[in-house]
Every structure is written in C-alpha cells, then in structure tokens.
Amino acid sequence: MTARLEEIACLAGIAPWKRGRVTAMLSATEKLPHARDAAQAVALATKRGGAVACWNSRQPRGLPELAAQAGVPVWFVEDGFIRSAGLGAALVQPCSLVLDSRGAHYDSTRPSDLEVLLEGGAFTPAQLDRTARLIERLCTRRITKYNLAEAVPELPQDKPFVLVLGQVDDDLSVQLGGAGQSVAGMIETVRHEEAGRTIVFKPHPDVSAGLRRGVAAPEGCIAVPDADLLWLIQRAERVHVLTSLGGFEALLRGREVVVHGQPFYAGWGLTHDRNPPLRRTRRLSLEALAAGALIEYPLYFDPVQGQPCPVEQLLDRIEAAPPTRPLSTVARLRGQAALRLAGLRRIAHIAGT
Image (cartoon, rainbow, N blue to C red):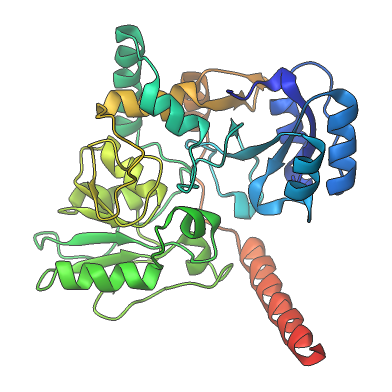
C-alpha cells in the first residue's frame, strides 16, 4: 500500500520547532493532532481509523509494539532529497518530506514504498522528459539537498583525486542501510582500493560543526570540511559513499559512484556496488531513478505561498533565496552543548549501574 495523506490519523515524534510545517504538509484536510507518547498515538489512530505518521529517529518509546498489538500502521516521515536552503540542524524548516507506508527509504533490510516504485513502477515518456529537464536544472543551477554556500577548497587544480563522503555511524541511514559497514571501515577499504591515489575526504557537516561525533580527518586523506560539495564532485575521478545522498547527487551529475552500503539509489545498475541489495533486480535509467526519487515519491511545499507545490516551483524559491552558510555560530554552540550534556548523562547512567 502506498501512503496517502487522507489516511493519516495523527503525527508522532516530530520535533517541536518544525511541527507547524510538517503538520501543514501532511494534513490533507483538517489539522492533524500530535501524539505526546506511544499510547496516545495508538489511541488516536484507533479512534480515527488511520495510521500514525512518525519521524523514524524520534519514535516514542514502545510505539512499534503497541501499534502492532492494536493493528495500527506506523508510517515513516523523513526529509525529502531537495529539502531547503539551509540545514535542519540550523532549524531551517523543511520544504520537502517523504511519507512511506512500508519502511524508511534508507532501511535496506526491508522494501520501502520508494524501492517498490523503482522496482515495479511504470515511468511514461512524458515523466522521463520532465525528469531530464529537472536533472539539467539541478546541475546548471547547482541545486542540492541543503543548498549551502561553501568554499572552493585549496586543492591542486591539475592533480586527480577520488572523493570520499563522510557520515555519522549512529545515523539510522548508516545503521539500517550501511550493510554492516562503518564510516571508518569504508575509509580503510577506499585506502586499499585506491592505493597510490590522492584521497579527499569531506566530513559530514554536523561533524565539522561539532554537532555530532564522527570521523573528521582520517589518516592518509586530505580533509576538506567546509569545501563546496559540487565543486568536489565535478572534479573527482570518482566518488565513494556509504549511504550518503551525495552519491545520488554525484550520479545526477554524471560521475562514477562507488557505493559501500545500500542506499535507495544503489542496485539499479547505475552505481558500482560493493554490497549490492539483492532484492533490486531492475535496471533503471538515471531519468527513471530520479523520476521516482524526486518527482513521484516526495511532497513539496512552497514556503512563500504556504501550500503544496511541484518540485519545479520549490526550485524557483530555492534559486531566489540568498546563499546559506552551513551553520550559524548559535547553532554550533547549541549542538556542542547538547553533545556535552549527552556525555554527562552517559557518565551518570554508568555510575548508577
């Protein structure tokens, strides 16, 4: 079953700062209620005869078990692949969401609505033509998921390199779609495969900002934390990723992409897969992959008009927005304080056991 807005009974696990925007995007008619915990979510869904739409990483404790006992479906909400002009970590509101009735798109342990669409969906010539124009616009206008204003790195212009995109091991996309690989493990594999070549490593933006723990400057690599992603992609001989969306953005720009995990764009014949997802048997064109991932699957929202819109209309808004720095000083300090608090809580927990 494909997720439909009119079948959502309530929302759960939505961060307070983006609750208004998510509610506006997912409410088909009347404004959807937000459940404070698993019991209330299941009660609301049972009463209203629908599904709980939940941010996967913020599921209320016990929700999967209670929902299964009551026969209530739990659907997954995540950011879309063209999200906004700015990071969610900087509290920039999302302008794109995905809603999935089967599973999170990054969870390769089971099919998602996106995977089912890509495996069996029919894409018409008109859809593929539209997608080809969309890809061209994304490339020429340099549009990505977050559309950050980043700097051109100081790298030798005439020296070839391979690019490795960092992530965070505790991210659900790595845990559920990384095929058991860690970021450090991927880097070690790349160093072995690409021996003798220059390896450039771009850390995850949240790691560079001090918001999350992760690999920042691996041995044997040139780390470029604030470097322009598209500049790196366009000049790299090839791009290595675990599950990073940067691999998809590299594919859209015609680059060779080596995938060490199992993100949604792997397994369709477009990437070099070190751990191919065996369920995915169809061979797709780039246009078909992008039609599913960028047009058919997400929901888009016009932040000026305050209503749903097609992807092209959101691109108009993004192109009109001023360049956005990766993170403000306030956002960096807030995230670093949260990390310290989490460390103190872990120490207190260990001391009490």
